[in-house]
Length: 88
Image 1 (cartoon, helix red, strand yellow):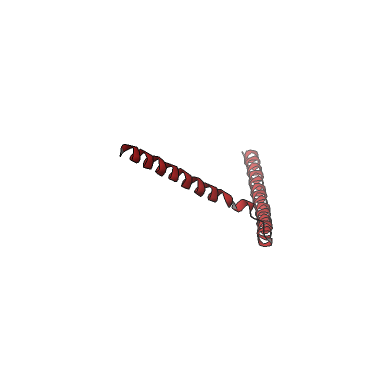
Image 2 (image 1 turned 90 degrees about the horizontal axis):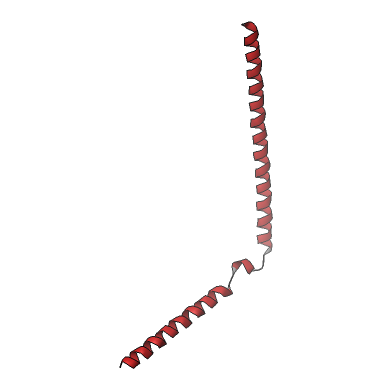
């Protein structure tokens, strides 16, 4: 009886290992990254790149505008200090 239990346990373990190996093999056979790229995928990637570029340009313009406004404010502040210093 003990020998039969051991044999059944070993057989069950082997079956479980074989089942997990089969599942692993099936899971590895389909990789979405290796699927052929469709025209729609290519177009979507191109559109996303275009949108990213527009966003970068808009951000750069906003940053420049902010920097220019800060420089103008600093310049006006410096002129005001010079004017105040002359009046004193």
